[in-house]
Amino acid sequence: MATLKEILLRDKEFRVRYYVADQVAPRLAERRMLEELKRASVSDRDTRVRRRALEVYYELLGTAETISSIAKLGEEVEGLKKENRELRERLSRLDRPTDP
Image (cartoon, rainbow, N blue to C red; front, side, top):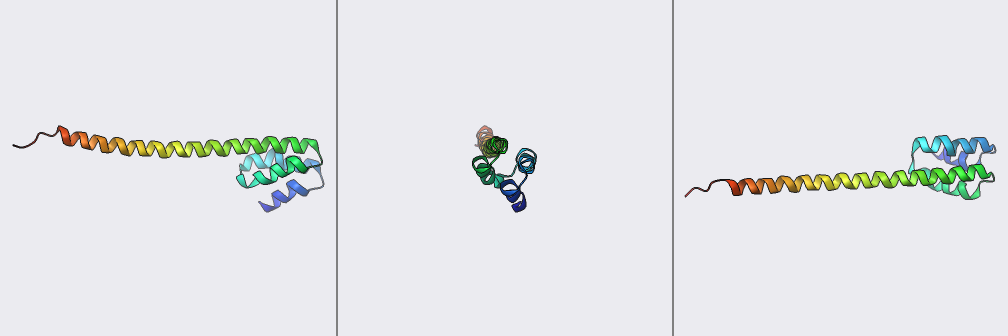
């Protein structure tokens, strides 16, 4: 990962930097690339690389937020399932006939 970050920020050829921003970073979907993408979007000498790095930065940021939201929803669903199970157990105990 460190090598890719270094290439994105320092390679001499804009095509190589652009390729890392355009093809490699989105496929890896690595949050660890966010800082370098943001830095490249500000400091790269080629405007095409800057623009694409910024686009990919926001794409990855949105993906990370979506994954986080999905994980939270999964936890919430599990909690609701547990609560539902407990309520069913309580209800079944109340429905049982009591012995006189």
